Amino acid sequence: MADKFDKMMEKFLKPVSDLQGRVKDSLYFLREDGCFVFSHGYYHPTPGYFIGKIIYYPLATGDSDIWGRRYQAMHKAWIDGEHVAIMNDVQIVKQYEVDPSLDPDKPRPLVADYTLEFPLKDFVGYFDPARSLELCQEMHPETVKPWAAQTAELMEFPPDKMGVTGSLAYGKIEEEDMDFDVIFMGNLEENLRVRNQLHRYSEEPARKVFEFGRYWPIRIYHNGFLLCPFFVYENWEDVPLAEAEVSVIERDVTVIGTIVDDTHNAYLPIILELKDVILNGKARDNLRVICYDGSIRGEYWEGERIWLEGRLLRIADRGGEYDAVAVDISFNISKKKPDQYPI
Image (cartoon, rainbow, N blue to C red; front, side):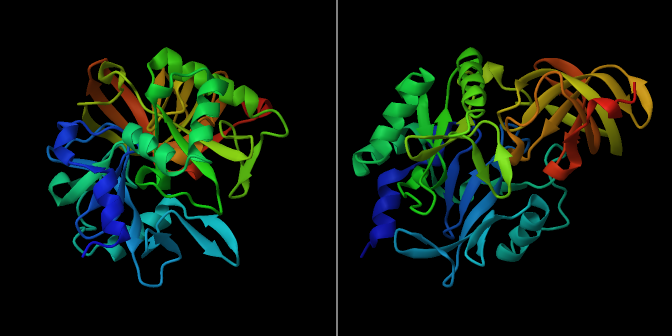
């Protein structure tokens, strides 16, 4: 007999075949063993696989309830009554502990060393963001329905191009957070306009979000809920890195540069274009940055000078061939003050 969990999964899940081989960012998947896995970005180099992370795994003593079953989060934990973020380097170790079928000796994606590849055949289905938003509004008319309406109005964004991720992907409101994890699935111009509006709103004291010990520059409080944005490309031809070929030039490099293009700073992966670049102490031409740490979406902006450590890669995609530095984790990238500029 199906329990509440099974009934809700049947209601929300869509077959993986509906994706037609194109996995976008911020999708939740349910694996046959009960794990919830989150997709990262659009670069999925191995046919039949996608790159991502286990987000929740079944655990009898877990501190999360998902429709009557106990789960443990991989990315955050309750410590002494406080929600604490778990960093990527700790998460990746735990992924292997939770799933013995994962081979720690298998090379991880070159652009995102803290992610793993998962075979699509192992999944029961995925949660379509737009469909999940529609179902959540029906299930939670006093919360999610006004959240969606107010967000669309505030951002002047088409409601039919919005979706949800996080626990709302499978219909669950985390009452201790009251987050509206909304996905804006617009074209480049629409998403940029929303990003810029959020950044302006986030400067208002009443809207500022401080969470996990830091300020979040494109999250805002609005009418009692936390608007937590995710951005997904509406048009596949606008997606950087899709169907790319990637090779390593050098494993460990240090780079300083000034951001000249921040168009993709709120997506995952975060992509920045740098000028006035110094790589390992030597000046060089413009260079791109690719970062798969979603915690810094909206953090770095045009005109800022930044320092970073990562891998120097050669990338060939639809936009041509270029060099880029892959940064895996937030503490390997930071802003430099004007008096520190080495130029």
